[in-house]
Length: 120
Image 1 (cartoon, rainbow, N blue to C red):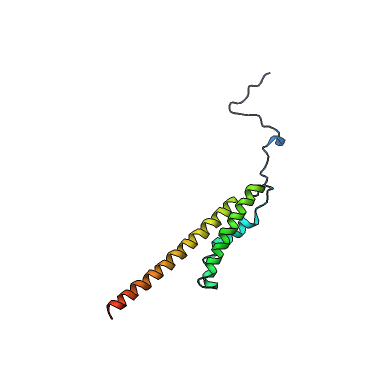
Image 2: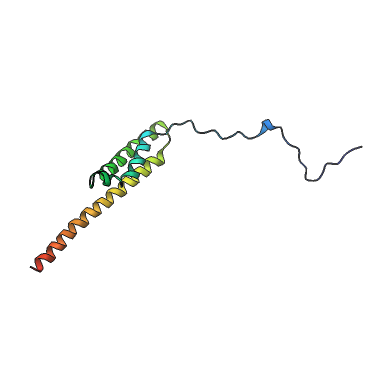
């Protein structure tokens, strides 16, 4: 006697035909990219350690190491391009804010000095 297959049933494949599992990348992460990201992220905190100089120095480290890391990554194929880019961006933003604060303080000194001269 011939059995009809049940509607909606399917034949299961052997377990050995399952898709391959995830294997992490074997490429290494560029260490200068990591330095750039960390220096850029902690550059704001550098002002607490050495006020006025510490944060600017860390931001400069982030920018320089970020550009060096990007060149090394392009040459060697390492991982970490996004880390180097974020470190550069954070360093540039930090320096832009420092420059704006500097010119704002210079402007404030001239305005307050001008007001003081007018009232003298």
